[in-house]
Image (cartoon, rainbow, N blue to C red; front, top):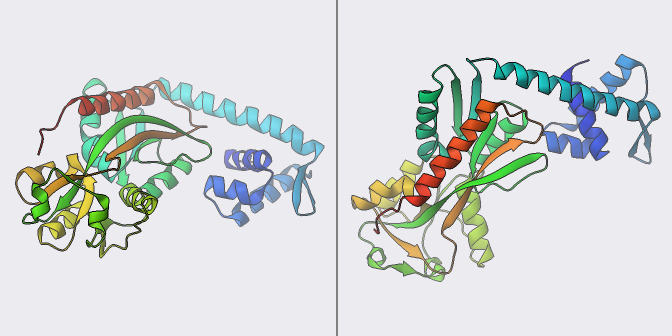
Length: 302
């Protein structure tokens, strides 16, 4: 019997659904079903009755849920306590593209100055990939842009960054302070690929104003999008901190967009069942502190 099987059983018991449990755990239904059968065979008892395609726990199933919960809690407590004693603790951090560019480097650098023996491993990717790694326990926590909370996940708002409309350098609208969203109706948009926070934000934003957009270019590279805007292939909206130097150098021009919220919320995200060690908590708090510093630092008017 493995810890994985116990956790799968607990999720099935809580949801009373193989389908919901599989969705919550980002696993396939056959995998979850097989784990339940393995557990039943291992103990030689039936844990669920299947009546009219619905699950109903047996007496043995109710007792097993109680003991499985205690076992998982005990294991996670022991693991956490042992990690606290380890000066060479490894902390695994996930970050979406924007957070990986702006917050992650100073975060790791500052933390390592205080804890040089702690190993901080990081992965930077899109929202979908980071969320998957969070549910698979491949990372301890993540810094995610515009995250929509899911079941069994805890989110803490820690940082808001400003978005700006990027235009080609010779676009006359770049001399305006702001323009309306409706004025962008006929423009060609260059966007990040689907699954990223930036793309999700844009899709929701424009759909809410009755202006669904079909990008003429999709890219996983912010640099490639900025370059394409410079060449006059279209326009985009990106976090100001990522493109600040491109704007002040004249590589692209920019202005604000009226009547929409041009601030994107960013979150620290972790699984509700994750044991948060003291050092992981310190790293989270440092991320909040760095985010607060950046919010307090005004970027000069462009």
